[in-house]
Image (cartoon, rainbow, N blue to C red; front, side):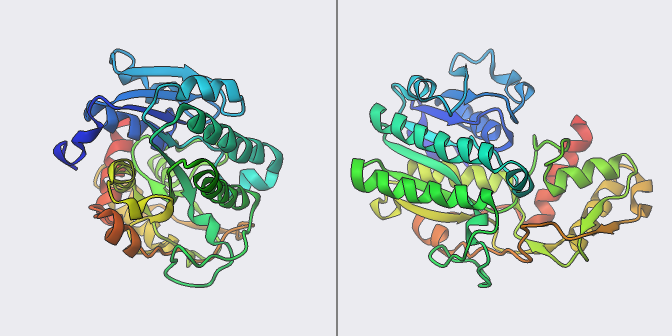
Length: 331
């Protein structure tokens, strides 16, 4: 990603909701590098202040500590901005199964608040984090954007509702939106701790501590693991495209390949062993399958390549090497 490609973002004003989170903080960092003025809105429910600490001295960075469930807060944050990158959400299928009400309040009511705020502020474009969970029980592989199944969790329902609301706001209020269906994003700043940690950082920290990771099921479930820099590229393309056909659509945001959990743990052990040879001997354990999980996930990225000129640079191997290096140096 070069500065010239996204030079139109220089001096633009971009609101990043959930900017203290894993994906949001990486987006803030890249936008600031490109010369944008960045407003971060976060309530720190899952985001971390340390993800933002390097930005606090930057005159182009503003932090608003607040909750997207409050419409006035959303309106304050959106006032005068050119673009919105909406990353704020309560992620995790298991979390939504345990507490569907809070997931709905944040992911649906909070999303609607941000759409209203963006409409009222007359922002130029609203780019939001959608989810591969929207594909639900669809058996089709690879996943293509216009073929989905029934959702398998409250979380999946909330993310599909986001897409429906975004569509309505274009038709009713002429607010341009783009939804990015993220597929198992991983990389620097992703939190390895907590009950709902994603599988890659969770396994990395366990292996670094010489603990045995536990795979849910037999390890043959597969995912389209997607390195953070691919996702940052996709967000920037969505913000800056001047192709009218690209607007008011959803796009798979992935690498377009799949890796099962056995293959994943093998790679993690191999790459971590370069820092600590003992990790190569750690045993992998197996537990029961997790409720709400789909067996396989693989994205077609043809639509994003064709319409947005998406060109992901990191496959699972190169992405994992970068991620492992970051965790080793920062944890």
